Image: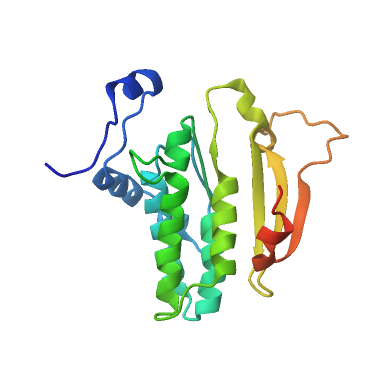
Length: 218
């Protein structure tokens, strides 16, 4: 019989608590969110702390890109908004197999997100191949936002994160580098921050399509 694979093995259920969410359930849960969660700019952030191979992620991205389609007629403007949509999705999973994929089980979360974006980007200009620079930017964003880590480990505070400020007027982006712990502290009104804490580090400020080359080794 066909259908979705919700369990890969009894051992993975035992060791990782891994059971994948059916697509229909994912869509039903996302239907419960207010329409404001699909705003194009600034794009609300999603964090999936146990993303598996990306069932929620691809559904969230698809909805974000549909909102871009409804707002932008220009392919160039839509593509830029699409980058912001991709950058607003963060995810973690304890299993490298789920993030990177395996020959036995197919693509992981990163590759699935890249495929959704590439298909959407190709639809903006039918008959023309998507720009390699645009695909490289989406791949960079996904690689730096979708990570292997254990969110139950106290070391999660040191998990590196990038944050993005997108500027549609000149199609540029400002990227800052921080940690998950700093983000948690910023969200906690009672957290005590050192007066000497420099805060997030600006690592890039320039044309969006120049980001992957500029930060190729980070």
